[in-house]
Amino acid sequence: MLTKRIIPCLDIKDGRTVKGVNFENIRDAGDPVELGALYAQQGADELVFLDITATVEKRKTLSELVNKISHHINIPFTVGGGISSVDDVSVLLQNGADKISVNTAAFKNPQLIADLSKQFGSQCVVLAIDTKKEADGEWYVYLNGGRVKTEMRCIDWAKQAVDMGAGEILLTSMNHDGTKQGFALDITATLATELTVPVIASGGGGTMEHFVDVFTNGKADAALAASIFHFKEIGIRELKTYLNANGIVVRV
Amino acid sequence: MKLVIVKYNAGNIQSVLYALERIGMEATVTDDHSEIQKADKVIFPGVGEASTAMQYLQERGLDKVLRNLQQPVLGICLGMQLMCRHSEENDTTCLGIFDTMVKKFSGTLKIPQVGWNTVENISEPLFAGITTDPYCYFVHSYYAELCKETAAVTEYGVRFSSALQKNNFYGVQFHPEKSSDAGERILINFLQL
Image: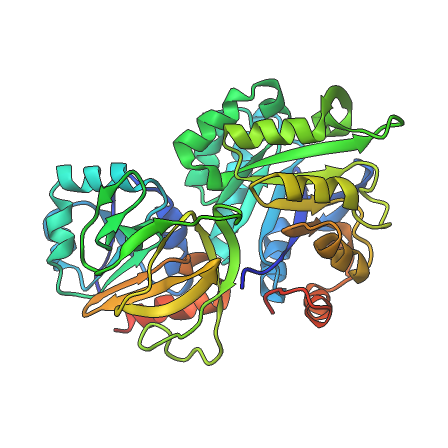
């Protein structure tokens, strides 16, 4: 049976793993290659590396890091952060990334999704959406790491992106990210039910029970978290054992 | 041992190279007929689309070379599908090494299947030393039907061949290069044939 996936996310800044709370207050959390290899060994199903510096001059550093990661890690991994062209993606895939994630650049130029899926296959195109529930009860798309609000509803953008060739959605709730109060179950379930591609839920995982919730009530295909793994609040192995004991099929 | 990876227009060769490197093996990536024919082992990977891949192989005469190899050959993902008789992906006639058809997943399933799934009914030599049904990493929209050459079975809406074997030809639908310890064991088993 196809399992639910547990995905540690490593935010990278200047070659180091960092973790912010609510997209700010960055704390150092170690060497990404070492940490990634450790997670793989502990039973992580995939890894996501997000380069949060991602300026033009850092691009080469990132591809070198991706190359190092792919030499050391025997599970699939996604690389994201500042990707805006077919050339960017080509370099990362050539250095061994399995998938790439696009966010702001794809929103500003949706054709990028079509171009990427045509050239590399939709299986390696992950669309990352940062979303926030507003006072009107609707979930809106935010850009630039959560700094810029748009008028686009999350579900509308997700559907459009899947039509254009996105193979997976990485959904981060800004209301929940960093709070450890649980995932955004409603919007995750909406996307997971209405889309034909897998949905990775992100933001808010703080206890093992939250992961059970996101797979049952949230209907997520995968769940992503960062700080709880980095700071060893929850071990990947114990989490997966707990999920299995609660009827969620995961790889152990 | 001379190990060759067939070079063609379906990517993801890099991850296979790195996985081999992790288990201490070097491989040559080539589309040269005689280099492929002289190799001790041949790996035929691939992520891409069936008809353009077959067309590429035919234009370079690689289809005949592959079909006539006598040494162990391992097809991975699209590589395995191309070793079957026919693929529904753009109605493509494939190499016909395995006597089975490649069909598209249908129904209410999410397509492609992405993630870790159980590999059952495993058989030697490819799965030698693996005692419980392993989880392996899959990314695919098409699957090979069960047939007498089925060497392992996986279920995703339908039960399909997650591994095939006929004489010196082996194929796996999943990605051993991304399937953690189980995947490494399968690669080592192939290299030890």
